[in-house]
Image 1 (cartoon, helix red, strand yellow):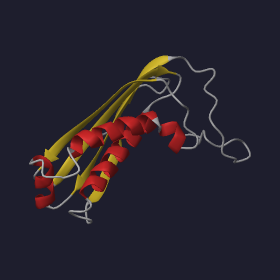
Image 2 (spheres, rainbow, N blue to C red; image 1 turned 30 degrees about the vertical axis):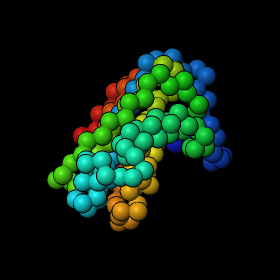
Image 3 (cartoon, rainbow, N blue to C red; image 1 turned 90 degrees about the horizontal axis):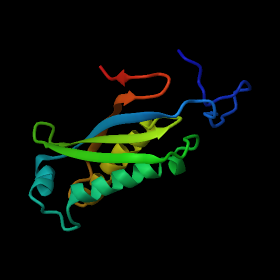
Image 4 (cartoon, rainbow, N blue to C red; image 1 turned 90 degrees about the vertical axis):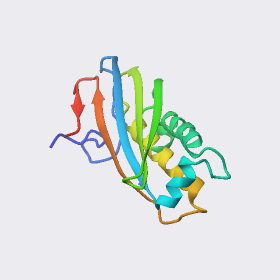
Length: 158
């Protein structure tokens, strides 16, 4: 296993020094889902939610989450994000919704945390908007699907 870069020689947490890293184009794609009762999914797909368009609000929340990642995750570097895209797919077989977030930057460190935060924030927003209808919804499967750029190159989940 690789060294844990967020700890110094004494074992204290620190922000990784990226000063000597090359500036490269970087992209990360993350995914996750929220399971719910079929009747709750119907509220989304048929636009029955009084608070508004659930997925439009969740998309904006995901974008905002990606942009605020360094404020939420203590050792993340603030990054000049160049793109955030959040896409949803209603899935009757899951009885829920899948979300995928793509985040891009040109910089010295990757955007995996920003993509994961976008997914998490979007899913939490779906929950928030539907909790009056169903409190038993389940969020899961949050993971990085793909990342590219930087010294470690391409990663694709199996």
